[in-house]
Length: 503
Image (cartoon, rainbow, N blue to C red; front, side):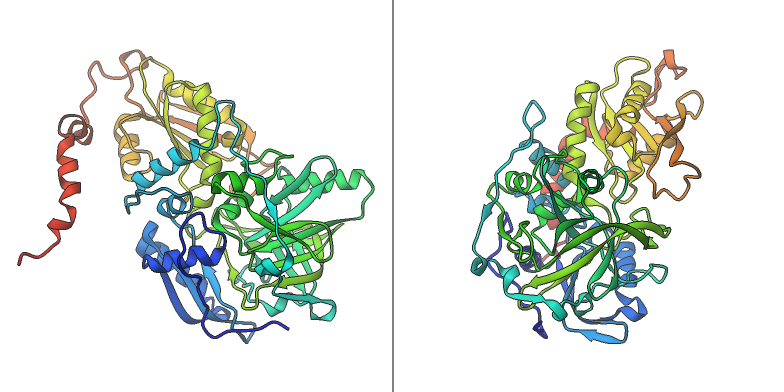
């Protein structure tokens, strides 16, 4: 039977690479960046409102939080719920092993990019370390095994994030499937709980899970074996939630490469699939080829998506730690920092197409925007860079607005970005609107066939040949950085001193 605990225990002596979600939570707590909350009433959507308030009041400095008891459907659950574990660039830097950490987000963004690029070869191959199998008695996810009538998704506080959601959802799943030719795939797809042993699963057209299902259908299968890990170590979770691995590449090995050591895995109870051994909860079952309505659900763009026909999973077994935790995502609250390794890979490839490119930033809080910086030397380079980005499928598909800036602008500083747009850009002629392009299906402004229009804003200093002034005025901040850069270093060194009262 499932055991409960009044206070969640956190594993101690944690440092990267973290083997489990709990190790990372222990690290965050040791740094004073995890808040413990005795209880929350999610029937009143208290947890969701808390997430919004943290985003409004703390922005990138919002801590992770652990709710010890949660009320759902008029029932109190003792299973803790963890949220907001990867809410800023510092968090990503920590899990990737960056040693020099600060609370300056722009510094941590650069550190993350540099760290990730150390794992990418010149021929665009990521470091890979194959996983290692462990015995069941070495796998915390096997401490409790539920089968038959004991299988019940409602034993766990998978919450309903929003009143407009179609029900309770498993929002942070790592869905593991295999194809006889392509091998293993791990991807994150929301799951709509339909009953004790039934959950809808949302595959979109272009994700690998959907391709695995299509291939299985062509082979004549009526179901596909699946194991779903919930609450895994943060690097494996990032690999599940992004598309760094090409189809046919193993996310487990990719996670090992970024971790610098192999991921420990263990065999499922009811199928041959291997799962992360340190997961909190593992669901095992079969995905039906049949479809039925699934959703609606609050999407990552901050809007409620519609109800759509999707596959569903028949849950055959559940294994979990003796005192499991549930990790919950709240799409639309906080940024998608967990996808950053994927975006760094895009930057490296775009750099080959655009030699003048110096930085690319896709704001985690605003997924449809791409901000690029170039070392501009010639007329037209800004527009050319913007067109290349829109033509590059993996960024162009998801991006609706591309802003091109000079290299002196920090693209992670949105105030600086908007200042450059307001003072260096002229809507005519420094704009291009591109019609009839691929769009994110969840974009609420898309009105037909998942097509939309996109815009390139060339906010670089316009040269005379582009219609700009003969001499462009100097930027105050840029002058300071270029001619008095030591002043910033001096202030950084004395920062704590400024706020220390005199004796």
